Length: 144
Image (tube, rainbow, N blue to C red; front, top):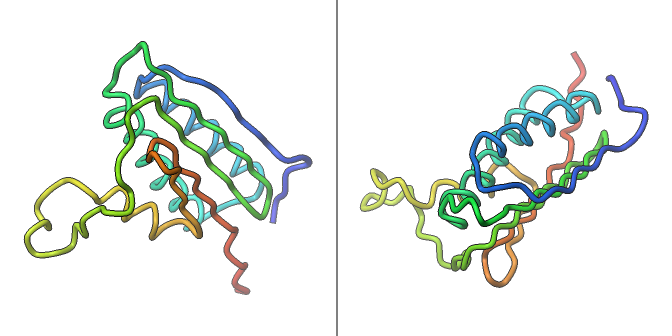
């Protein structure tokens, strides 16, 4: 296992621009790789962070360039904590419909929150619903 010499942190306010958001995600993925993260853990983090950042830009800030998102990432070889905030009105995260039910299966809403909850060890929204904290613990290594 390759490990990073020191922990990595990122704390930035960014414009509501998908290209800028994706560049920040790439920085996170590079830091995770440097900290020895690999395989399914990296895949799960990338899927969840993509959902959270895109939701913040598109649904939270409605792509308004005068609004910012805030990304706070803390990476160690054993744990990744990712906080994504937007300036939008938020949403009621306690009442997200199950997108796998028959009447919603072909509707595009609600899948992101479900994915984040499935892929991360912990997902916490603030009361307003315009901030999410996702925590991923490194999976135990499986001997070959």
